[in-house]
Length: 290
Image 1 (tube, rainbow, N blue to C red):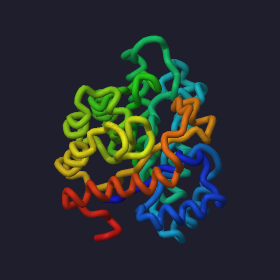
Image 2: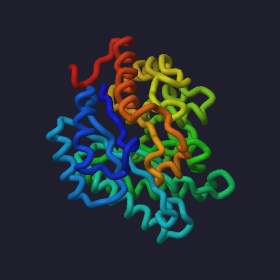
Image 3: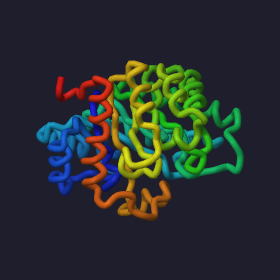
Image 4: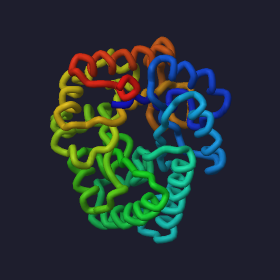
């Protein structure tokens, strides 16, 4: 098992000003970090990758689509093509970073709604877009972990069952699913079954509390969640995702208007201890301790 920390808590663009923070995340015991891919060039991310190498941190990537002109399910072919090109750029940056996966709601525009549920045509267009993205993902050696979001953040894919069925329609080895404890807690009648029943599609897991604060302080059924992680044979990234109100662009999307912890350090230090405690209870190992 690898334990990661998503940098969304601080920024959407990791730079040299975060070196001391990254070093402390490593010193805390994390195997790696999840790096936002929203701006910059592949060369920028290659440089960041070298800094992470020097710090001894592995990495995954995360992104989202916030611009309606990049809508992968739009009826307008040029808009969809622009979205596919944007995703190719995200994949190129992720590969340059040295990440083997990029995760997030990379299927539709975050916070965009039609006033109804997804239509058959929208789902068909989404499948076609993902197949094009998958082809490029395979070329650069990166896997896309699509994320189902709660109904207040998107409308295309809200549940793990819908996401898994969508992944099967796309039918590309580089287009897979991720599981997020926060979103599942909102949308699933049985969040644990949502993981176990869709285990074959899941390649990444976000550890996120019900308030998106410090993992372990809220009402997510952690004991059952970690037992399910063990039961399905998952042995990959467990990445903490938490949010604060320090980033107006993210707060507008995630609707975070107050602080959920006394400090960012509490989130990653207490969150790490929370994960380690559950892994040890189940006799599971963290990768760096193998």
